[in-house]
Amino acid sequence: MRQAKSWTRVLVVMTLLFPTVIHGAEIAQKIRIGLPSLALTYMPFYVAQEKGFLKKVGLEAEYIQMNTGIQPQALVNGNINFFPSLSTGISAAVAGLPLVVVLNFYNITPWMLVTQKEINKPQDLLGKKVAVSGIRTTGHQLMTAWFKKFEINEKEVGFIMTGGTAGSFATLASGQVAGAVLTPPYDDKAVTKGFKKFMLIGDLLDIPTSGLIASRAEVTNNRDRVQKTIAALFEAIAWIRANRPDTAKMIADKFNITPTEANGTYETLLGMFNKDGRLPAKVARGYLDLLRQERPLPTDLDPQKFVDFSMLPGGR
Image (cartoon, rainbow, N blue to C red; front, side):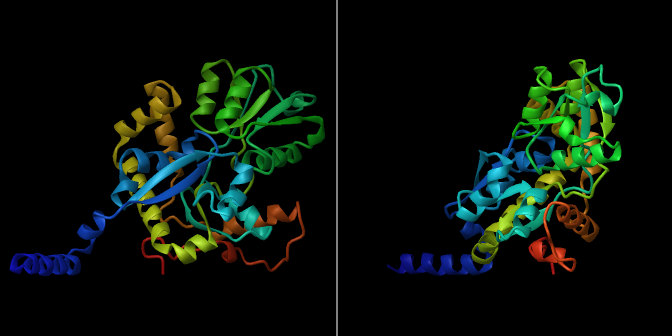
C-alpha cells in the first residue's frame, strides 16, 4: 500500500514537471487531410507523415484523395479536418463557408503551361484543349488570365478538368490535350516525354497556393490539434531545408523522375518557401480582386477575415 502511494506521488510529480512525457502515452489524436493528387506543393505533408513529425506531436494522420471542388464542404461537414488549397479555401469562405487559412507555405508557385511541340504561339491552341485541375482552381484562373493577356477568346479553347496536377500530366501524356498547366516535377517529366515548357504563367496573378485550411469550428473547438498540425508541418519544412539529398531522393521516388531532375525540382521547391507561414496581405487582396471578376464582393471586404495566423509560432 505504501509503495502504491509512493508511485502515485511520483506520477503526480512527473505530470507536473514533465507533462509532455505523460501526454506522449495518450492515444494519438486522429486527423484526416484531403489531398487532390500527388503534387510537389504538398511535400511538407508527405514529409510530416513519413518522417514521423505528425506522430511526434501526438497525431495520427490519414490522407484522403479527394477532388479539390468537394473539399470545402467535406471540411465543414467534418469528413476531413484540413485541406491544403488556399485559393479554394478562400473562395469558399468568401461564398459563406466558415473556413479560415491558418498556414501558408509558399511565396510563389512556378505554374507552367506545357504543350505539344507543334504549339508555337498562343493562337495555336485555338480549337484545342488544355488540362487543368478543375474549374476556378489556380491553374484554371491562370490560364484565363493568360488568354486575356494574348487576347484569346477562352471559349475557343476547351478545358479538361482532371482533378489534380498528376491527372493533368497523365492527360497530356496520353495525347488527349494540346497543353496542360503543371507544376514541378511534372513539367520536367513532360519535357522528357517530348513536350515543351511553353510559358511560365504562375506570375500572372496573385493567387495563394498551398498551406492549411481549417474550419472555424476546428479552430475554436480543437485549437490544440490545429497547433500540433502546424508544428508538424513547420518541422517538415525545416527538415526539407536541412536535408537536400534525402529530400531529392524522396522527390525522385515519389514522382518517378531521375536524380538529376529531382535535384532541380528540390531547388525549385526550396525557392518557393516563405519564412513565417503567413499569407501576405497583398496576395490576399489580389485574390479577392480576382474573385470580384466572378461575383459581386464588397469593395471594403477585409482579407484578414479569412485568415488566422495566431497559431503559428509566435503568432500573436
